[in-house]
Image 1 (spheres, rainbow, N blue to C red):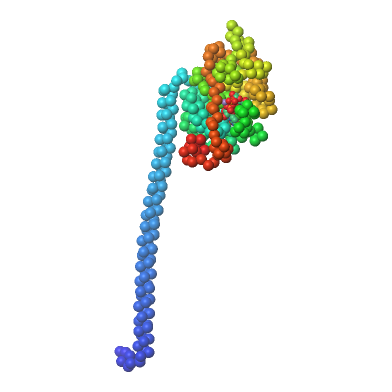
Image 2 (image 1 turned 30 degrees about the vertical axis):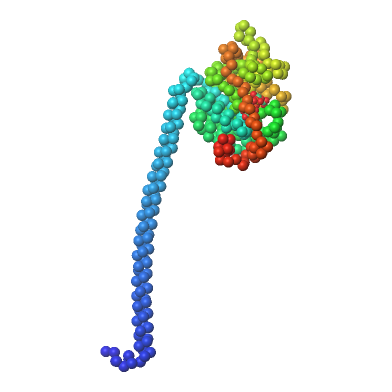
Length: 354
Ligand code: UGA
Ligand code: MN
């Protein structure tokens, strides 16, 4: 029994009230902690569930991505099959020599247009490996896209023309040789990557010329070095070797710099890949007189002008034209944008491939 007088002392009453209050507070705090711990456990469980869900979703995404890649591959296969079915050229078999088609290319207003057109021509040609060498510091996505869409086997390289050899926008086109660094880079690639190859033919196909598909069938016949007429070049409607009755070359009809060892255009000939492999020094150079690129190269691979193999029905047909895309009329401001490769709106950028 608690003596009743204890409650008479006010401070004792206050003390007991305080103790009761503190005990109540402690009980409340314990309760609260328990509640929080339960909440924590629930949240942890939810996190676990979400983690498992995210793992499942991640696996699903991964699988879907794999399916997408597989389907992309399948689309490419079907595209290639369709292309082969509608091929405008005879079918090829495994022994058909490959054509290594070397294209130097540089940025300008019409580059994307020219390359697009060329890609659709080449996409009809079976057993053709397109080696595209950009005159740039790095590979450009727009050119990469054109190559990818062509469905051709290809190699995409870049080699910048040294600035002292690079023409200005306003320079006439003949001021300096073009494609030197780029063709060399492709030749070195061939020497390094195709050293074991025993057959095939190498052709320098500029990005603005026009190619009849029959030129590719002619190229495949090349034993050492083949030659054929080229339309609209050298100030003539056609530049061509002149043949004797027995079919051998006796002269060339060229009028510009007739004295050149080979008075022909780059588009007029193709050589067997073995000549490239056995003559690693056969490279182009800035250090040759204007118009002598072709001659210097052909001399370096050990060919004589009269020993070339005349093709295209004894040089009676024109299957390639040295067409040139007209330099578009551009304002000063537009030329500046082109030079700096900036300042285009999105549609212009898409048109130009930047
Ligand atoms: C003529 C010949 O047909 C070319 O094969 C030869 O390279 C050129 O002359 C020359 O003398 O150097 P042309 O139509 O005057 O050709 O030259 P372009 O078509 O302007 O250039 C030839 C190739 O080099 C093109 O594929 C072009 O895109 C590329 N190129 C041109 C570059 O890679 N960088 C340049 O700065 C300019
Ligand atoms: Mn050209």
